[in-house]
Image (cartoon, rainbow over all chains, first blue to last red):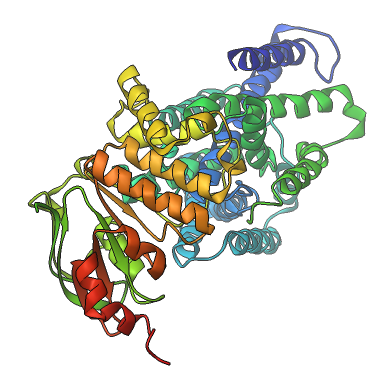
Length: 315
Length: 242
């Protein structure tokens, strides 16, 4: 098991080396390109991919639903909608709060979708219904955004289109410290709460019977997932599939399910997938692919395979 | 006959009250069944006693202390549960699942110490699933799954084990095996076992005490032999309709 994780780390290091020394401009390495463009990109891939994966794991355990993920349950979209509202309102707001306000709004967007989902879960909606509700939230949010876009200027429109395709290249060197701090703190919080997450594996009732303060942990889990998803969505756009795929891949590779065992692997696989997509983008720059196009092509068939394997278990 | 659980004027229900003024004791180291036809509130009583839903009124005392006085962790060391919920778990090994029973007592990382490992193995041995330790839970039969969940509950080293409808998904031989296992747990490990069931014929042969719930909120607690001669079972299971 340790060997498998070491292999994963080695692969990721290979990707990092490749992406640092090879970019869209070829093999040229100078200080500006390396530090201003490639270094932020590599850090973003690593953290954003990993956070998408860990938030996917959180959601799958919390909702007891193997199909849960930031994109499928509409959390990314909720975050996007709130950011779009903020950007449109930005003209009327003082400059000093716009910047951080974006972080806060994307978090509130993700959190409100979660609260809505929890509302339905507590009224005994089935797992499938919950996913349909997630899809409806998604389509509501994207319709809302397309209406909002009408009120924006054409430049904002173009930015939004680019952003919604997903990209790990948007974090600039000067934004990097904030991105890293927000990411690392969320990851530490997940590590600290992994024992309770493990106790949630069976169900909320069992967790409670094992001494977990369920009400408190429920809030901790959804806030953590909303936090992580909001960071990724704000800086990289609504990136799909990594969140739902990574936990399944981690379990399949390690043949284990316990949170303490698969948490690191889930994070690494998320990072691995992000690096893989970014590498494809770098190798074929003339194809003008987007991150979400690549993940869609890899991810959608894989999810069908998972569903086929799990067909005996009712969802 | 020392009581581990005492129900005092207990009223239970989810939204509306399903049964009121329940008075009963659960004796130490015994096997007790909660019986009644479907939809009568057995599950509600079980969930209330598991401390998952609050009672509408009245008290439950565990080892002479009120439920409310227990911290979640203390409660976990006294009472453990097996529910009817079905799980969506792939790649969860049996030994990992049983190990979850030790998590109330591990450090913040959930590390399993050698002493915990010993308890986990003892629980698996007692239930007879040692040979399944490295199997995946999702690949087991319903009877085996039930045993694994019981082993998890035993790994908490409880004084009281509560099971909700444990016989429901089982075939007849597995049901009998389960009854023998619960009896063994009650007598040899000095644990009070309480479970709900509507398998009348099966249960009355094995249990020491029966708590019977009637369809308009009545509640009777008697020893198994008293219950048989009282005719209450026949009355409330509608056996004398024809």
